[in-house]
Image (cartoon, rainbow, N blue to C red; front, side, top):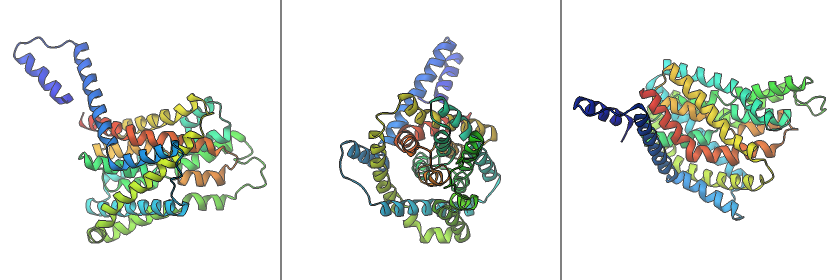
Length: 365
């Protein structure tokens, strides 16, 4: 039974002269209905092939299997995924036009990416992390996860809640601002700059090159514009590449990520539970803020869900590369464990269906 059906049933009962349920009973019914929908959505998402491949890799790593993809193979797969996402988004944006919906989503995405590292940094500092490590970890929660977005796209399309094609452009826009905010936080907090008086300090030009022209940004933005230029004709020629091939590549890549996440979790036995919990608290916070802002902006359900997933995700491709250059003294074990070992599995299994359901309720209300 859906919420609309509950409301309809209450109205019918009142018309027939039956006593209307009291407020507590009605709220209890709504809560039970929401809980049922949440469990159903999560269960459905858990049974998707991509999620099951991730679970296989996770189990293999925890069981100390030697399963692993060569580093270059994993990098190639990630580039293929980003190229597909960017290209397909460009094709769909050409078909629908870069209208007011895109401008609203892009504006909100930029604001979220710039601002989300601020509360993340404050919370991580309260967990006892030093300034540099807290800032570097916060950067991961200001940037975005391409693979989480890909999984969300597949899930949202399957439930009839597909976001606009321009959301892949929003994805590309949200990758960098959070990294810059985190670097600024570290520079201000340490007063002498992000590196202090470290002789190995990276020049601003080299850092800008890494942040703005990393492989992920180039492929995502480049693929988007190629799709935008070629339109439906180009999309038809590469339909197999952006359809069945994309799904297969996503499964293999998630298998490898499952292995990597399992190994990060195995190495996190000395971490405080409260610190590991930040890997769940931060995506919930980011997703909730995005839902509220997106609702106020009037985004449709699909775009609202996609924006919330992006805000809830944590980067583990672009951010680690940028932070290793910008903040080399940060503890990589902390930010990799939280982003890849905790946040990514949480979003893949529970976060995506929960945010999709919340977006549908908000957009329909």
